[in-house]
Length: 341
Image (cartoon, rainbow, N blue to C red; front, top):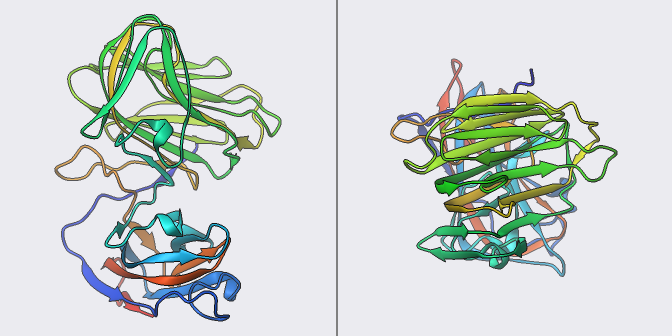
């Protein structure tokens, strides 16, 4: 059995520390935002002892970059995107609380083809899709409409996590409501699998033919579905609880290359999507939070003694702008502390 990285539920009492590094001036060698200085790393917090921590970035001035696309992430040595996933610098807006460790977040504020990144769409027959108040509504009587991304190149040894919040109205026929469909096209294998929702159950199938299902009412309310995939093991969670785990017997290569979601079959269906997220830095199990069904933002995380919290610039320099950080932390060993670097 593959053990995913565990996320921890938020706690009520934390210590708070803030750090406001000098503004980004990456065009000047040796300064914050220079991707070539010490691998583009700026130390934000020094950690002594073992601590439980969560971190927020606050953008006070929009970031500007060099000719190509600059990237920014926050983590620790050896996992530089652990705490906040790699993000294109110019996509972090002024006054934004930059917190998400999800690499891609479709929030249903627009059709997927107009989102960032833009999803490819395939459709045929009689169908409809619309967006209203942050919800994507899909209906079909004899057609299909789904969205996909190619060329993800996610190492199977690293793992992959995707999550969607969906309410089903009707779902008849095959492949009618698909939260996720992931598989390999390159890297020497054809492994992967897909999740399918019916009105009375959720199913998980693999490319190798393994299948499992969990009986539930998918129509009574929105439910959160999360799928993790690492090496050849697929694990499905529903509302924060593991329900199905399968080992794919198909030939497994080295990369996850594709993700699909929507209505993939010419069938009758009606469903509402609140969001679709995925991240490419590991297979993460969810953790229930007090007062909620699921902690939708990964974390907090245990940071062991001696691992400082760092900000990393890559791809291109970040030439101007400012982000400061707030760290909430709680000691897990005597004498533990987090201080601004």
